[in-house]
Image 1: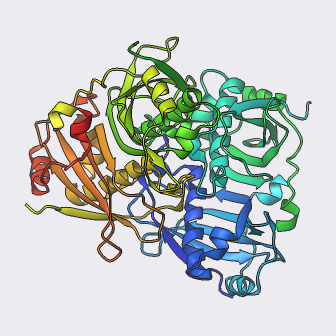
Image 2 (image 1 turned 180 degrees about the vertical axis):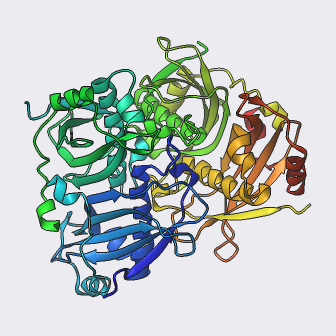
Image 3 (image 1 turned 120 degrees about the vertical axis):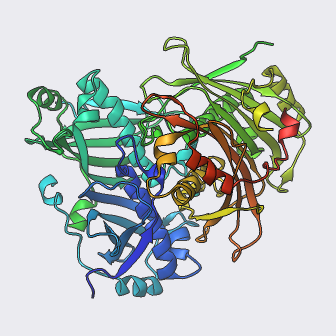
Length: 151
Length: 151
Length: 151
Length: 151
């Protein structure tokens, strides 16, 4: 598989900056939420079933690599799946400049998503069609720098 | 040391809820930001030097344990320091109900903060007085459930 | 009736500040949303029927009078009702310092709220009990400075 | 002049929705902030001097005409200037569907902006080049429905 199987561009908002004049660290998670919304619609189709009706966020991990200031250009988010198991998977992200803007990587992150049946309010198994999609965008673990230091 | 050395109450906002009617997973990080602002002012004093002039967020990790709905009661955030090193430390959190409201724990999280000199734009060593404060609120590692599964 | 029939305190968040280091002008509307949530629960009781099931926001008007910086003290929001009609009313606000903090007034605002039946998806008449509550907090029109200049 | 001298598209975010599942009324002001940031950069050039260094928001007025749900298509914001005076002007907005998406108008709004000298912390006169730009995008007053009822 390719190292970066999927890229979406996410526009910044002026209000993503905090009082320090940089995009706020919490807003990075907000940008990743939008990257998921964009990516999942394209991965899983018009019904958006995985995102809207079928997964819950169980976990986030994010490392900040460089400060990001507001600009009119979007940021690019590379996304791929890791650790696809019976009822959950990880979504890996790298937040970087679009190719025409620069080469800075701003953050690496990972979200654990659990397939969920909202009617029964309980976890469910990933459907075969969901697994096919996820395997098509599967990739390597996120190369976090800090994790081994914090264990 | 005690298991939960420091607790602050953080009010919710109605807008913390997302379209699912629960407090949004990203807003939990926002609530933790406020817990830090409140806690650091009390730990480090009126000048707020650590928070406002001297640390940057290098990393977040958060696990969601139970859905949280908006209510007029605040949430309680227990905070303590872990991994105090030369120029960084981890802040550990548990987000739960205030004692008079309930006993649910909603999330566990950890933020890595790096002492920073904004004038020279580079990491700095923790000052002796900062280390004294942090050691006074030091505690055990966060008992994350997912970490060993995602490594 | 008194000029300021009802006051609620609303906590600020550090993230209410924008890149200028002041509480962002849009966040003032967010603070007023919270003031309504707090106030309506107290005015209309535990079932929160007016807020959650029975009104929609039709209009906002706000004037900014002084810059507000983040501080640990809350802001106070004085609220009262104006223009109570068959199916709508205005909520007037003045955003100021709590008495123990200062005497600055930061903003004046007004929200037009329309009573709404979500089951039929159409406006409805204010119920008699809602009118009694609103008349108990009725007051004078908001003394906007700019309105006559913009008409 | 044309009735709608200037249009910018502003992307929605999933998080613009509130617990009712609609784009929150306060978020409309956030979308207008982004429309200003995009529009002013194009109107006033790369230095972004008007927006970033030279105006403060003195007033907002907004009327909501139709509920807006999150979708992947952006909203279009038509903007024009009204009431250009010595040191201030109004920015008028209509929030609607892009032509290829639909014909719904969601909101009308108006922001009063005051030219400001941040170095002296006081209002200033609009510069001749700023007045030229604003006159090039000047238009009629916003046809608010509620204003005459709330006077």
